[in-house]
Picture 1 (cartoon, one colour):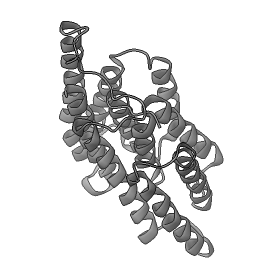
Picture 2: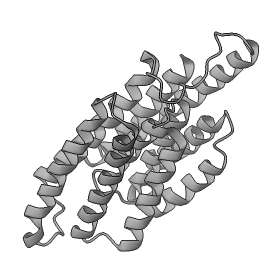
Picture 3: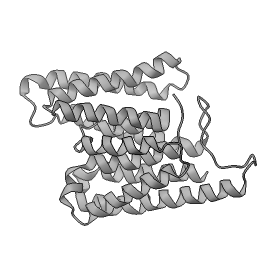
Length: 253
């Protein structure tokens, strides 16, 4: 229950950072900061409870692989799925202004097709091959849309790498977290991929969500103070809180 609540707190904080274009950098950081701190605190409480109840059936742990998630682990997936859907809608109705006019129709077509494949995440009983295919297709459409929007190829590659690392951290939950980061097109994918690589190397640690949440809280504090680096890389903070949720409430695909 505590880990599920931590994942929810991280998801809400990530939603605040996702809304940076609407709220502004400082306000989004201020709103997200308490949720990042709450996520870290809840994971610490969950770990202490696990140690006390070691060996008991009441141990507060992660969801089993391929099992139906209990209610506390569902809301993070819903939040990140909604963010990914909103990102696709934003790109469909308001394509990046720097994109050549000749590419707009194709760009919108890819956004609509991506939304169809994203809807496959509400189908809970897909075969394993289809579950893997939906994420791979969405990464492919992201790459095509990013190139059409003149995103540098190196940044596209790092964004895809960050998405794969989130998948390793949290399975299906990580996939939805990754899609929320990718859609709309991110800024700051290169530092995010580097940080996620370090977190993935530590994925066996039960306190990994605390580490990710603490890093996310640091980013939120920097954004709240008006740091130019933090405000220019919203994907980094969003990705850190997404990693917190993915590690706290994983589900293998």
